[in-house]
Length: 240
Image (cartoon, rainbow, N blue to C red; front, side):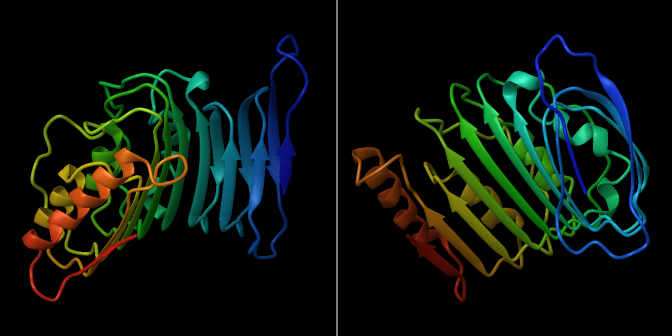
């Protein structure tokens, strides 16, 4: 199922009803539009859904939806976590969530979303242009008590060592076992994970920068290597 919108800013907005038959949907279905106000689904077998655009109203029954992939441009709305709000009625059943964002300003307030009860795999792909804080990250992790794998990809042309909340409240994550951090810049995030993920087995840190072996990248790699002194026995740390 593909629903696409195009044209120019002066075109009217529309409501769309999407219907799919009873066969199981194993391939991703994609909705890419900027000119819709709402979408109503009738897709009882839809498993995977990918959406790019501004937050709009989603309605209808998606009882088997388990994988959600959202791409959000900061120009579309005033809050970095807003792309999740239209999917609030489905979030408790999502098992894999990928959130791709381009950020251009700091965010202080985070709207409440339902607990991500069944979320096992969280992928955050963040291009940070100007913001120095991204508290939404901590909120998402804390809202997922069953999280098994966390992948955090950060591309930033500026150094954002305070990308998380200014304060991180301790909260045990008993299910989290596998963490990958691409764009590692300091130890704050890793120490939060180490202190709260009591059954963690592996962390992969890749302190990549734009290109090449920059000075900042080398500093980040040395910072990551210092983590080895703080790890418990039997734990695997991989530094790329």
